[in-house]
Image (cartoon, rainbow, N blue to C red; front, side, top):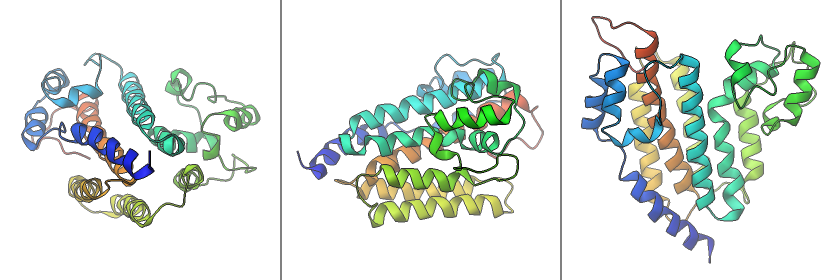
Length: 260
């Protein structure tokens, strides 16, 4: 089967998932909840329930975060399995995106946080002794995110650059103009989030989501459709995570909460 036919079939499958995305009314219903227990109950009445599994309001914050990251990896792996074989490695590489800050922190010789010792992704590299940690990082499935030969006590290389380099290596062909434009927009979005003076990032995220939805619609017969779909999933999970964690960690304020 030709690649464009394979991706065309895949788009039909992803289109069904795309049609199940929560509506604006769904989000209003969920985000009107004042506490985490009611928030999670509202989530279970929408298609967002696929992200939370058996998550509950009594779980420790680190356990909640751990479960959300695990669900993201499951979604990425499932989508990769639907792809043509030659593209599966490139798609699977998205599974590490939520872990980039922690991996970068450990690679730079940062102090261990207690939760890292219990995290299924990080526990094998959560080692106090830096030489042993460095060795473990070099053997990890995400070793490409660790700068080669650098001194972790002095050098800090941004893990996003390393992630992109490895993703490009895994692509079976040079990313086309659409994939490159999508990547450039993601990087611009990250910079805009860092530099904005807005009280939250909702407007910037909405703008990115609009662009990703456009690439998804126009990506028939090309790998663009897969990455646009998963990045939209990532924005959805990011917003859900913000709603969960603010209610788990922060008291209700008179001015309400924002999607930080």
